[in-house]
Length: 257
Image 1 (tube, rainbow, N blue to C red):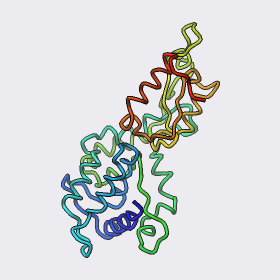
Image 2 (tube, helix red, strand yellow):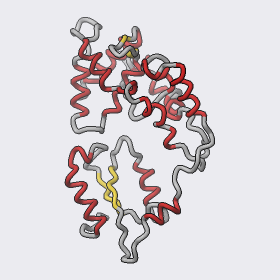
Image 3 (tube, rainbow, N blue to C red):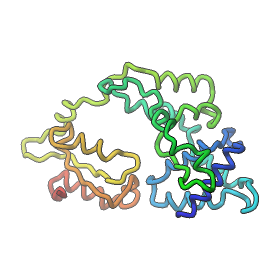
Image 4 (cartoon, rainbow, N blue to C red):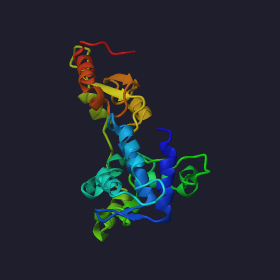
């Protein structure tokens, strides 16, 4: 849907000029709107759904007035108010005492903020050759600054900041225990298998390869690597994928090389 670039630019430019109050009480800012990218790769119809959302954002081509249907749909697509634990723990679950950075300290925000390519004030201009980039499975500190009403209470904001600055996390995982759990039962065959999608938007392919390579903690896990699916593989073709990796685990299906 290449034509959606202009639609997104128009929406972002309108929100940069004047944020919009949402039915839930939150504020639709340009930064919040761009978070709709979290849906990409999550279901087979995600791209078509976003195309429909962008196409029906305004009540007419001549007026920069958002439709009520658009605002309601945005509210439903971003349920952080209903599921605040996602906002609180999304980065913390990856915190590792063995890493160079002992605290998460809003990792996505620190990576995102200084990058000129993400400057929506520039990319939303009609003459800009670059599109405004949607964001994916990430959280930002500003989500508790009014953009999401239920996240913006003093207690919730303080808790989120406390978790972001916590620096005494334990090890993320124990490589030795993982090796023991996947050790063969004497038959020479591991009973573990997994599917890894090369183009998965949410699960880093290189990170998967690091833990499953020879010498890695999951080296005994048989891996089915495919570029036929994105993150939504189980939704798209769940029966075939499950049967394949189950057969690999049982030794009934050969591991692709």
